[in-house]
Every structure is written in C-alpha cells, then in structure tokens.
Amino acid sequence: EAGVAQSPRYKIIEKRQSVAFWCNPISGHATLYWYQQILGQGPKLLIQFQNNGVVDDSQLPKDRFSAERLKGVDSTLKIQPAKLEDSAVYLCASSPDRAEQYFGPGTRLTVT
Amino acid sequence: DQQVKQNSPSLSVQEGRISILNCDYTNSMFDYFLWYKKYPAEGPTFLISISSIKDKNEDGRFTVFLNKSAKHLSLHIVPSQPGDSAVYFCAATSPTQGGSEKLVFGKGTKLTVNP
Image 1 (spheres, rainbow over the protein chains, first blue to last red):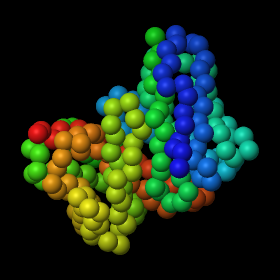
Image 2 (image 1 turned 180 degrees about the vertical axis):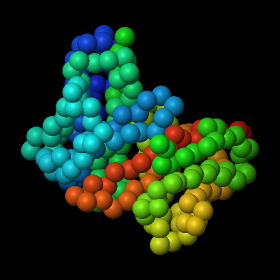
Image 3 (image 1 turned 90 degrees about the vertical axis):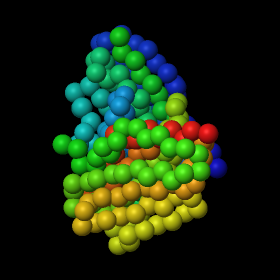
C-alpha cells in the first residue's frame, strides 16, 4: 500500500513570498490532516478535512494560511505571505478511522 | 498550555535493556492515547495505542501502560535495539463535536539505544 505522498520535500523562500505544499493521502482515507511541526516541538494540527469538507481549522492562521481538498482526495496548503516564524516541517496525514493517522515525510520550509 | 507533556527530552539506554518513555496529560477528556516514532527526515510512524478503558496494551517488544488516576502513560520497549533510536511522541485525543479527532502531541523524547 502506497503511503502518504508530499511535495516538495524542502523549500526555501524569503519572507513575504508565498508557498504551496501538496499532499496525496492513502487511497480510500476519508480524513486528511495538515500539521505544523516547529523544531523541538510536537506536531500541531492546522486543519482537518473529512472528504472535502473542513472539520477543524481552529488553529489555522487564516490571515495567511489557506488549504483546500478538491474532490476529497489531494490537498494543498498555502502560505501567503510567509513570515520567519513559519519555518517548520509541514506534515500531512490521513486516516481511515479514528485516531490512527498515517503521516507523509513532510515538507521542510525555511523562511529567510 | 501543554496538555500532553513529555518531560524528558532525551533518554539513553544500552542495547538489550528496557527503555521507559513517560508521558503526562492534563485533559481528563482524553480517551485514546497513541505513541508515534519518528526517524530524521521522515514523518511520524504509528507505534501503539491504548484506549482509556484499558490499562495495558502489548504488541511484541512494545507495551503501553495507562494510569488514568495519575493521568500518566508510559511506553516500555524490551529488549531495546539500536534500530529503536528515534524520537518518540506521545499523543492523545478526545471525542469532540463535529467528529473532529484532533491529536494533541507532546514535544517528544529522543531515545538513543547504544550497542
């Protein structure tokens, strides 16, 4: 079974630029999550989708972050404009059922 | 406000000995707990979980113990192997309105198993 795919793996941008990350979940998984993991911290949920609907986006900084999941499969997370404090690893995860989430390799973002 | 706490940033053990990783939580609504393992440059991998209706769950070399009254859980790895060297995250979830199953993670403990 193919795992969760993410791209790009690494991205370096300057502050105030925009960036987008892509995630392809495991086939058949209805729930998709985006997490932000800052160095030395555990992953923090940004947004959760159930199929193509948003279930929880309470911790998404909506003034600069946006996410969509078209057709209930792939998802993109965008940051516009980026700030220095957005430097982190962005993890995508998917789940077929409660709680056990399967993570992709992550995208390491560096904002300079 | 840290709802899931892993107070030991690192742990070092000898190969063949027992590794014990600890986790404390503050939210009494948490009813499902998970441990994830993370190697560098990879995403976290699910390891083992436990429901709040149990106090122990075992899977091979890995056992998770839950003490609800103390709001404490621990992961035991025995015997420890060099390949177990990784960062271990404790996570917890609670049922919420709208079906959200948000995992709350601790900061992680870096385990090093020395040959």
